[in-house]
Amino acid sequence: MLLHTSVQILASEKYCKSFLSVAKDLLGRFVRESELVYGQEILTYNMHSLKHLSDDVSVHGALDNFSAFPFENFMSRVKAFLRGKNRHLSQIVRRLSEISNFEMKGEMNRKSVIISDKVPNNCFLTRSGKVCLIDKYKSGEAIAIVRYCRSQKPCKWYPFDSSELNIFLCNKEFNVTASVRIDVLPTKLLYFPFRNSFLCMPLCHLL
Image (cartoon, rainbow, N blue to C red; front, side, top):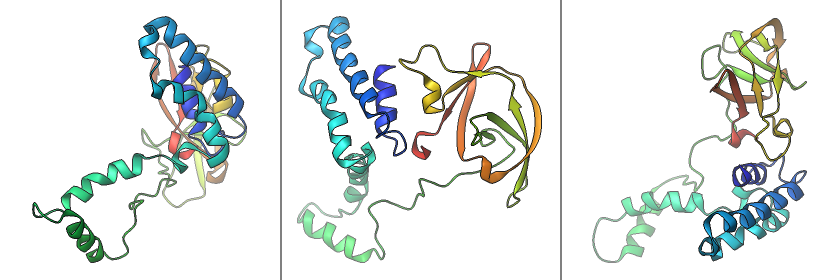
């Protein structure tokens, strides 16, 4: 949970600045406790680099701003450009020149949100911090009928107050009905059964 929580903070444009010191402390604890559990063999260069990850975020912003993942994912497309065994660089350049409006980021809109009254697109957090499920909604309308969770609380196994990251443990009683405007539902949540409750957390790429 130490690594998960710290990376979740650092990957978020919303939280990476305000909780930077928290993430730094959690990563330090993760490295120290990993040595106790797995031995000194775990203390590789990559593990040591985690201690400085928050420093990079303080300079460059959220992790996605300087992540190598988009380039690594793009390698599969680059390989598909190759038709022969020779002059690989020339082949790639020619293929790229044939693609109009080429964009390294791809076509997916990371900030797009599907709003629905069907699972799994019906769980949201209101601006006032209440978890709710959309009961009735027609696409394009400004009003939705929702059911609020009767009881929500932070997850006690998180290394700090999970409600600061809009992560809650909710009971299964969603029985307080209300009519709300869609614009008061800014945060989409993922929710799934956990023991006798629901674990609700925001989609990381929408934070």
